[in-house]
Length: 262
Ligand code: GLP
Image (cartoon, rainbow, N blue to C red; front, side):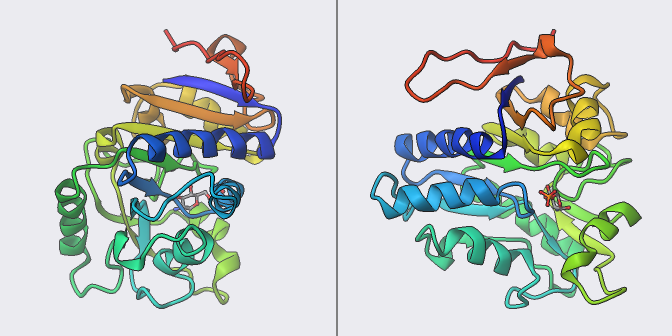
């Protein structure tokens, strides 16, 4: 794992867009793991700008969502499958049949979770997985207490996560469960990019990057991944030990990557 600190969310977006664009340039049919949430939106906007000016072609990539609410079908505008199409894959020109998410409306969500893990494997595994981090240290919908050995599974959402996502739902109707890629699924991605912006994420990020690896902070799996990059703005990185952090490389400038945590 290494940590790159950028000045602000805009600089984070540029840096993460570079990582995605490099992946797609090297492998036009790359399998990307994409998250929803507010954090990646500037990244998607930047990628869309690059596609619009012909600097990037995403039409051949395949996408696997990180997670999905149980009980919402794909056409529900609040589902993550609808959200990722709206915010990212439609404007990026990625055909619907190349965009996959867990089947939240399945009668048997456990079975749907297992099927999703298989679908990722059949696609050849995820080449580049983007992920955000929750204020309680969750990653995808892996809440504190999640066994880090779990693959895609059904998760019960914590009160804090439900409160954080309540703005998208009429009062009291935030789903109780989700199907989520597990920590082991994240570890199996060939590259993992954890993105964090804003002061509200600083304590969780410090736990994830500098605390013990364990179920208490599921995002700490980033430390165990053989090729993980944490990209954070100064606000999110404010509680990190500066010895673990480097500045993100500036376009055209020398690469000054953060050091690997001992
Ligand atoms: C949700 C999603 C996560 C996301 C997190 C943080 O719980 N399941 O994948 O990382 O929220 O979202 P935001 O980026 O809006 O802070």
